[in-house]
Length: 453
Image 1 (cartoon, helix red, strand yellow):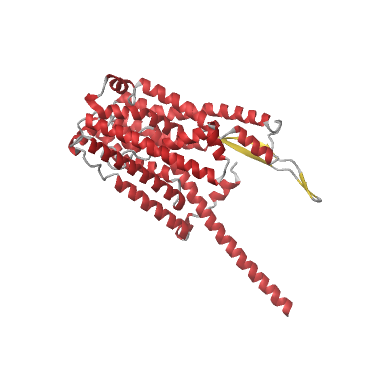
Image 2 (spheres, rainbow, N blue to C red):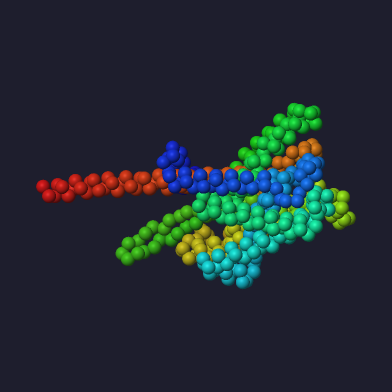
């Protein structure tokens, strides 16, 4: 049975989109900043040998270059100023959130309200600069070792670090502006647009393999069917939830007694969203990226990492699945759904789970339910992320389109549509309130006129 919010959203008229001036301005602002982001992916970092880079990326298209090209919107394959993408900011945000859930000083900052939130945001930005600097320097040194630079040396390294770190910080600012003045989460939309922009090239490369005979027609149809089925499965799982019944007792206010109400506490099958998959990908891709760009100059350790931890390799898949499961549990229980906080909020609101005592018993019950639900949620995330990787490896498909990309497309797309619906719903109800006020004034005017007569 649909909830009241879902019923209200289903009654939203999309025809009101042309009349909702504020929403239209927000959409145009969002589109404008995303266009700026796409332009920046084509501005190259100075000092790169374009011909050598193009040849290298064509050879590595089916491996790490395809993975990173998808997440950076093609900026890495062109070595644009946004080659690092927004991943350093995401990694810093996740690290700070995890520390804020487990480390005392940051836990205290979270309790200080707006001032504490600003301080945590400041620490996140500092962390972004540190991670981006480390990654940019490693990338510069690796490109020098791979003979992808026209004039190697410290001047190239410094200029590359400044350019790439500046590009990441500018992307972070774009994302914050979209979140504050546009529609949707800016950081998520930047990743979403980067993935969508690469899809035409990915499918063109995929169909080219079929044209030259590398893939049969049956395999191509099977892969397309698998992608469609995965999209439907992800949509179904992202909307799935476990409802915990909540009861509120009767209460007396003055001489009146109000009956107790009931509601439900929704627990999503995947409360952590795409965060575990993104964090696991960013940790696994960093050493592989450096070893890939180092090429033949890489040491024995980097060569071993590239051989056994490259995309599609057994150890890569094993660690990828393990990290996804670990971060799903850790992020959910410490950040997105903390049973102790939820139990405390229910106790403060005089709500309780039928048959469960408020306080510690409710916390234990919520943790028990969430842990059991996450068995399905973490397995679902790992399955969606691993199956495309295994299919690509077994069929030698050079075009890259992973399960993490599907998760991001579905999750961000659903969130964006929900926010647009919320704006339309607010605009629709503002119009209803204005019309009801006008009708009330008219009725009031008629009554006053009758009294005077």
